[in-house]
Length: 315
Image 1 (spheres, rainbow, N blue to C red):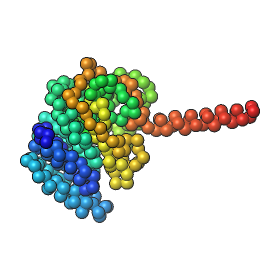
Image 2 (spheres, rainbow, N blue to C red):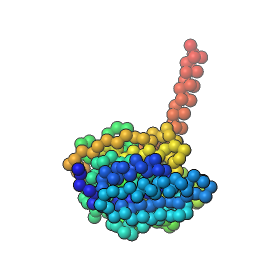
Image 3 (cartoon, rainbow, N blue to C red):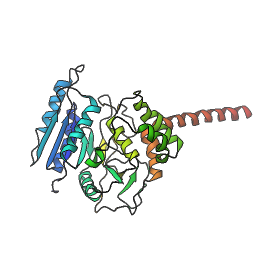
Image 4 (spheres, rainbow, N blue to C red):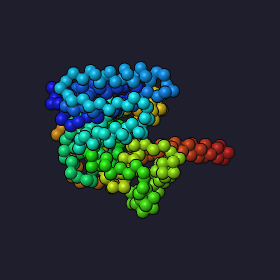
């Protein structure tokens, strides 16, 4: 049996006992010594929420290993943004570093050791903002290393430090200045820059788009020039896509239900700390700016139809 996880684990739950149970079984197998649980309350307009929230919280009562359980349960619905944000603030008020899982993010058993080793290795390295568990790349970018570095925080199962969380600028006070002077340095490619500028951050700043804690985290990493660790294999499967999801509604999304693979140990650490530009470009268009890819496919199809029509007229 593996040694218990000594790093605190934070588990964020709501109203899905089915997915929560699957994630909880992986936490139980890891046997963390400290478990933080953040739970949102039922929505008034959804009568089934009351029983679903109760059933979900009862799963936490099944802790049967030596573990300190700290609960932060809201009796009213705060919504995903406020509940996750306040829950993470509570977490990092109490611990310097932690592993964070939501109720639909099923980790591979090796995810916990991966996080623990890298939390220790980069604990005092301010160049690193977070450790991700996802790998959305269609082709390997890592060579023989166990992980690469990315500009993009991938937060469906992740680990991080208080030192990153405390830097978040929720009022976006520095966004106008960063937009003018810093964003171009972060994204020299105009296509990438336009998406994060107009589609995401400026829209949130102008209140045309709802704020989200993960976008706040991402902007912090951009502004502070911090990198995220991306494992060479996918270590967390998101099983929450579908009608019951909060933000992930499309069950056919390419990021849904990506299988996990085991991380091999001992870890092979990269010889240099710099973002993998090719991997970042691939992740941008395959995970974030998917509409660009869809438009590209539509335009290619339109051009092919025109070409076929021209050939037909010539023949």
